[in-house]
Amino acid sequence: MIELNSVNKSFGDLQVLKGIDLSVAKGEVLSVIGASGSGKSTMLYCINALEQIQGGSISVDGLDVHAKSTDINKLRQNIGMVFQQWNSFPHLTVLDNVALAPKIVLGKSADEARSIAEKQLQHVDLGDKLDTYPTRMSGGQQQRLAIARALAMEPGYMLFDEVTSALDPELVGEVLDTLRLLREDGMTMIVVTHEINFARDVSDRIAFFHQGVIEELAPAKELVNNPQRQRTQQFLSKVL
Amino acid sequence: MLDASLNSDIQLKLFISLASLLSSGTHMDYTFHWRPVIKALPDLFSAALVTLEAAVLSMLLGIIFGLVLALMRLHGSRPLSLFATVWIELARNTPALLQLFFFGFGLGAFGWHLTPFTIVLCGLAFNNAGYLAENFRGGFQAIPAPQYKAARSLGMSATQTYTRIIIPQVFRLVYYPMTNQMVWAVLMSSLGMLVGFRELSGETQFLASNTFRLFEFFLAAAVFYYLLVKLILLAAHLLSRRLFTY
Ligand SMILES: Nc1ncnc2c1ncn2[C@@H]1O[C@H](COP(=O)(O)OP(=O)(O)OP(=O)(O)O)[C@@H](O)[C@H]1O
Ligand SMILES: [Mg+2]
Image (cartoon, rainbow over all chains, first blue to last red; front, side):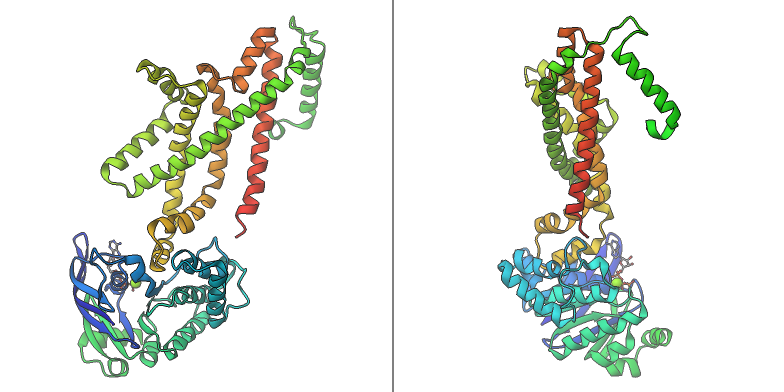
């Protein structure tokens, strides 16, 4: 379970998260929507301690993320993350992109790491690209590579930060399909997205962010079809 | 370049007159004697190797210190960042000769006497590090932030992230400036003769004054430098094709 308790986060004088309370149960898929600058990415970064917080607490499987005693590299192995773009390591082949972390973080042998990587790459339909360099692949393929790379660490949780926003429209589908597969496998996920229809169909709940607070949090279909808050209605009418 | 700025006709005339000048020496009072140079070729060759050795070692040190300086400037505390800034500013904005003299006569004044080789190595490494640090800094800034975040999110430590993900990419970005600095290090090492270092220039000076064949020896040294630089550029090119397959 991922739990956020009154989380505050500021960059200098700018408060970006203002008392976020949220819990995501094992097996749940939560989508996060909201306007640009409302703090969605920042919240994801706080969950795996890529950013520090100024108040409140975050725990993952009961472990306090921001406690001094927490082994942060160990914790991150349990939380996969995929970004909007610039995910793939351009100097490594597709195979090495995926095999590197199992090797140097988990201490797997070269053979083990290779077979883990091959398995994950086949899973996202990149089994024929092992020796290619990511720069020679489409944006959609690179995003699927990033997903495979995160999954190779066998994380309990996955965080997605607008993984389709930088893609050409015709490539969005293949990446969303990969997320759907993950959902079917029972992966616990937080998905920041602008794809409202995808969020409605695939997630259990949706959180609507507005200026650093969760303005509305509801079961997915309810939030999209029957939003309670005026700001949610305004946002949805703009994007749908 | 000669080829670029002169047409071939002029180049030919120049070549002929230079050739006749060197072989007969009839146009001037100076008569050319190449025998001493030819006899000294093995000495010049081993001196060229000393030059290469000093340049390569000073580059390796320069790369290590340059990386550290760049990281200090980007991520260090104020004192560290200030230290790096002072180093970089001095290295880039004062004559290389003075930097060499600092490690020679400067430290010597405080009773710290380094060997000529060490003086040249320190001086060149100081200079290389200063120039490379700025290249590296630009390289680090050019790597998109998600590269770092993605590596850390996989559980890699900061050190693993830098050594496996960030620095390899930076090296590619700054490969050509680095090659230039290597060439520069070879040429700068000739200043070593002024602190008593017997590299290619020092050795040339020594042989020339022993035999009084100044022009011949320095011309031969120039050819050695030229070939050395061309070899380094070729090696760098071949290496880059092996290293950067992406
Ligand atoms: N490293 C940083 N330093 C300073 N301010 C930052 C930093 N990162 C984000 N911010 C600011 O924090 C606010 C929230 O940013 P964040 O990226 O979390 O928004 P977002 O909801 O993900 O927006 P988008 O949909 O555009 O990705 C913005 O005002 C942004 O300018
Ligand atoms: Mg964002």
